[in-house]
Image (cartoon, rainbow, N blue to C red):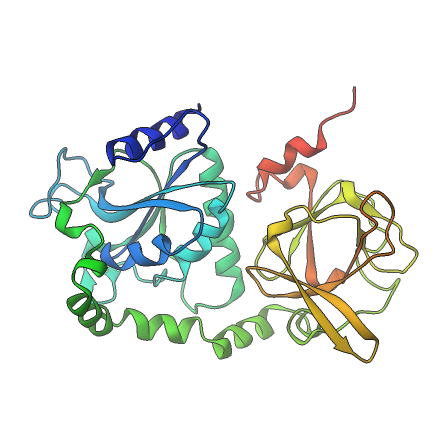
Length: 339
């Protein structure tokens, strides 16, 4: 097992959860103000095994609630998850939707450096993914101010006292009262409302990109960016950045649109029945970004016989040479040099 996997297994065993060497678990650590408010969103996420509230980032050992701030620690949550069921990128997306990344002085009603937001990365891959995710959020135009959430190399994580664990379950009335009055929910509802999202996307996308991804439009065949692109790399959702297709599965379908035989991450796509002017078709959307991408047909090449006919205006191409710096380094292994 890798170092990160071993650490996750040790924590689970300490919590009384049976873990074998075959179990593939990873860790993630996020800080976003009061740790009570970060537990529930992650615990309700499929693939997340355990969420622990605690303290990290400081210099003093053995912090407790009465002195963790004096020792330089931040309230945070440690997440043990199954990377086969939920990705680190997906956890990052959930994290951003719980905080105000423009607030350097704390989070909502909780003020002070012990309540500031941060991503504690455990390795280079997490560091790159977190940086790329933050850059995408900044470029989205959703927030008017700069994103000040820190990316910090993870150090020792100290679990908080037992009464802090699952506080939202143990004290639901007090928790709901605190959360409502903290201003967190009001801020998040406004920042992530459909209206705010549309406004941000209109400012960020071209008219064609907006029409395709948000209004189920279709671009002209043969007059789009990627229909005949033969470079090596992957195609991601223009809106959310989630990986969708690989150039290794791209082929010339003769239609004038970029076509693929299969998705790069099947779990990242949603298929819906589309009844319109052209009869019944199967629409393809991105799971996280909910962008309209195109349609899938059953007239593709063997063995699967599928043709994922996509709109270039819904995609962003990441060349093989730029996968690492854009946070998609895990896909480099697909493009190994031929002997």
